[in-house]
Amino acid sequence: NVKEHKVLADELANESYGSEKRKHILQTSSILGILRDENFLEPKTCFIEFGAGKAAVTFWLTKAIGGVEDSKVLVVDKASHRHKKDNLIRDRDLVERIRADIGDLDLSGLTSVLGNCDSFSGISKHLCGAATDLTLRCMVQGNQHSVKTKNLLICVCCHHRCSWETLVGRNWFIANGIDRKSFNVIIKMVSWCICGDGRNRNKRDSPFEKESERKKREEIGWKCKRIIDHARIQYLTDNGYEAKMNFYVDKSVTLE
Image (cartoon, rainbow, N blue to C red; front, side):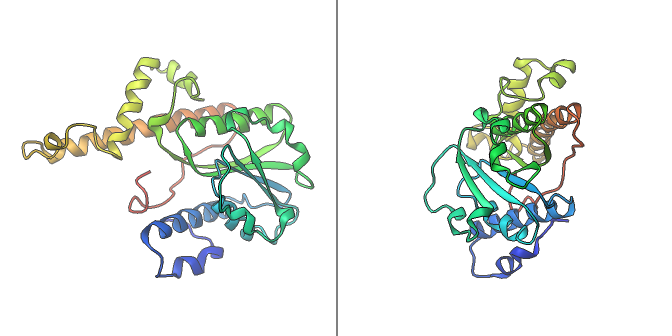
């Protein structure tokens, strides 16, 4: 079942919202619901929203942890956005924004922002392809440099934008006989379950093409996505984390 969090109950009940706004509300509510049910919303935690954009998740997260002792949120994004939601958070001690590329982020240099917190927990709603791998590496390397990174929740997406150079699961791929060339084939096929197979529309919609062929291509696309994610899970497991895939939202909300 899709998770929900009570801080977004009124937003979810608002029938005046269009489909796009409602999609983001459903996604954020699910994220907070998973964080709650996995017991991630703990005291003395500094949450990092990676690739935060306008920080809508941070805005609602601060409401969810409002009564949690010694917690805060660090907003990380490489761009400077207008109309940032973190500007609407009244308790300015609860949130801090850092403009940085995730690939350059070293958590051992951020211990000063922890305050009374004793660990970092990472979250992200949208980290395209390689950005997910950069975030996983950032959290793992933080632990290796005596910075406690306790929990991490990432909504994976845009696997076609992964790269062999940044992929954290390279060792798993190589161990299973998948080299760079084969990996590049995989990231071309991942879009089959989201955007079709890239063929000419007239050919794709031809009455001569069987429905079973389209279903087969979609299934291959999903399998390619899960192969990449399995390699990521293995990377986290190899580095001492208890990692798993978790159901997020219905495909009617997002195909990712």
